[in-house]
Length: 304
Image (cartoon, rainbow, N blue to C red; front, side, top):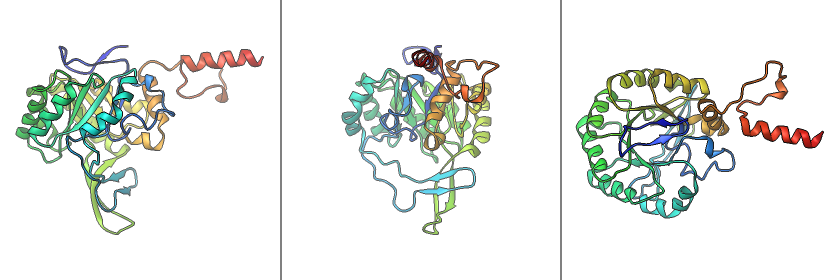
């Protein structure tokens, strides 16, 4: 299976399966190596990286909600150059595309970071993360700053607020793909401190809002759309594809059950084998693929 998730041309990116992690849910590609079979994924999105180092947010950072979780982290990271020095060899060893999520700060920093990433063979694409209160004019300018400094695809993750207007602007500025969308912001009371905390909302509650947005944006722009928000099952992911997304990004379910990302990727990538009609419950494992099935056959023959 070959899935083109960007505009055709020199900035084209083709994946083997339409399932990736979302930025911030997977570290820099090192966290889940002993749990998830990376080769089943379409690509890896790094944690958010800024050109210069950023410190973590102060105070409470996690507030549990009824059907979601609110996070306030401040997007801490050591800066682009330090991340490259530490993780370059890992990214080079991975047999799938690596997409660096770049925090869009200033025009100058976006230009410098994009030019720096353009030099790295271990990086296949850039995902530009826009802040929530950005105007369409600023968004267009930042995307233009990125695409003029790299030949790599530039994906743009849209904020939920003003997403429709911004989608048109960044598509016109040269974005290769639109990622719809960044987790929405909300406010909740921290049960530990008793203070109100603002942050991003993750969980199944997000899906109906973003799913509707994906469908509308996919119909109005001539740029591939990647759906992201509230995906906790293969069916959730398929709903996004049915709405018009070329691929999906998975976030919060990874923290609860990392293996679920691989299961979703296997399902949408066609790696799931058909269950035999007479199979007993303990003869079938959700997410089993051809490789695992053959391994089980060999084990059964040895044990016979």
